[in-house]
Amino acid sequence: MATRVPDPGPVEGNLTPWGARSTPGERFRRGVTGACPRCGSHDVSDGFFTLKDACGSCSWTFEREEGYWLGSMVILMASVLFCFGVFLAIGIIAFWPDVAWTTLTYSGIVLNLLVPIVLYRWAKTAWLGLHVAFVPAELEQDHASRSGV
Image (cartoon, rainbow, N blue to C red):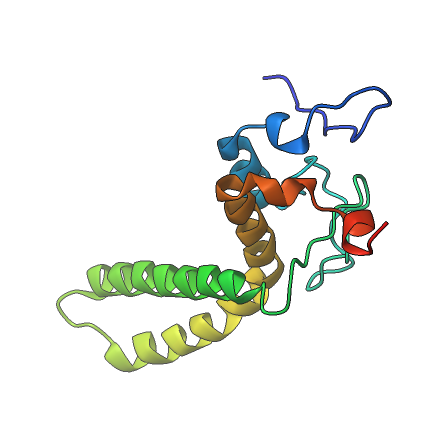
């Protein structure tokens, strides 16, 4: 399987809009895999918990407006609920018919505390990918257009 090369960004003379350079599914996949949904570069994080203000490759600003990351919180909460549901189902099946409810409860609490910490940055890039899959016009916005240049 061939590896995908990130979009190099604007090329002199290339007037193709960013929204036409990729499909909605590809933009979503880029976000879910932790890459910039606009260009596919993985140069998006400053550390384990933080995203850069803009992509290191295409300079696309990640934060759209105040409250933008509320969508990532929804994705994070859905991930926590999914992981807990799978954990609970496996725990009940593994210990049936004498389910150790106390152990399962305390283990579930620890899991529900750890999952949001581990998936915090991923939820942000997944939200970016999901958002621009449905609103491709956001791909055309960048730092220069936001500063009035």
